[in-house]
Image 1: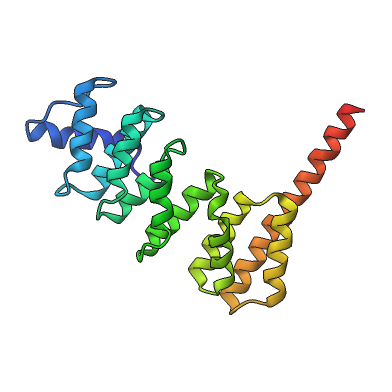
Image 2 (image 1 turned 45 degrees about the vertical axis):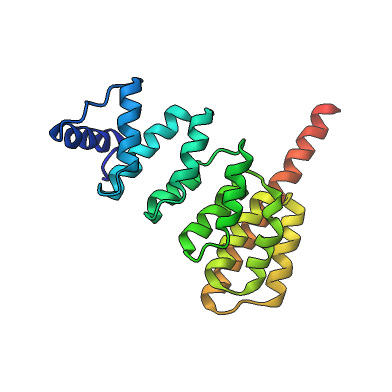
Length: 206
């Protein structure tokens, strides 16, 4: 069993305490500043910085200061931390969304993938053309990321039609065939669920 979030926070607290940093107290301004310093300290372990960031994300979600903070963290050279920030990036800040769009062209695959996932889950349809191009590109990891994204961005029947069009072209290799089969299953399940929901609604209204 992996280390729990509480255990991670306790370990962060112990390390900070041993270095003379104030103890992490729930909901205190001093605690938030300590967490911010942990995230900003690039000499600390990546896991520790990510744990501190997650704690701040939970406390600051919806606040302007979180949006400003995220814009700095998503540029951190620690890829895992940057991806964590991308996943938590708020959807209400245009500057943050613009930054995520820029990261779609980042040479680091993990960053570009995280940005695509984040934008898709935020229903940002501006990213749809690029995601379709990723699917059509034939590059394995881009194909997977693009297929995952369009599932969030297209209505069920459009999603199924798009995936079917890709399947008609045929897979690149055996691995790609499995990716396409899974994508087709997801698309078909969405359509089936959608049609069932519509029939239930029609029955209720009658």
